[in-house]
Image 1: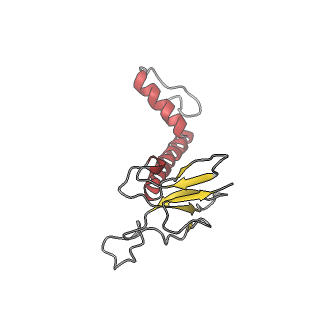
Image 2: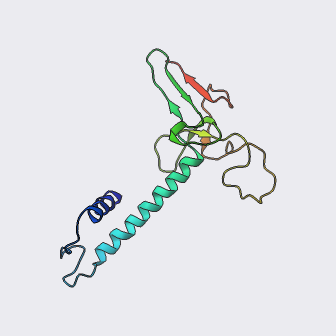
Image 3: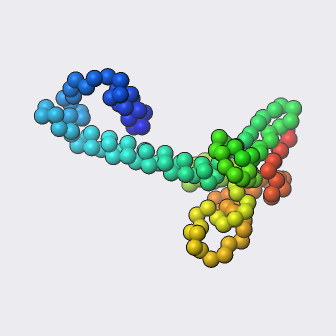
Amino acid sequence: MLTLQNWLSFYEKNYEFVGRVIGRFYREDGLPTPELTRVEAMITEGLEANKQGLKEKQKFPPCNAEWSSARGSPLWCSQNSGGVSRDWSGVPRKLYKPGAKEPHCVCVRTTGPPSDQAPDSPAHRNRGDLDHPNLEEYTGCPPLSMTCSFPL
């Protein structure tokens, strides 16, 4: 639906409006049909999901990853990994998302309060998001290492 919305925005911006097509989305009197209302609701949901995804990516940016037949697969975190600029590097962790078949590597903040803790909450353990329930350490990787290597 978001692809259709992008297409519509392109045409609204670049072409002169000449009318509506009577049918699935508009009645003969030019008013929208219930189908158009459903589509608009889906677009709104999609935009909200995108917003949530960007928020999640700020909290848990994707790790940098590389694969080499000679070296195996290193994963690492930096202040710009996953294309997300921030003032911390973090450590690689597996993030399990509800409904996903496999976890993916994310960078996790190791200091300060958890991201979802309210500013006026009581003292925290200064572990950042390390205690998030959907995270798991990589086997064989030191818990606070910014790089994990998995040889062949």
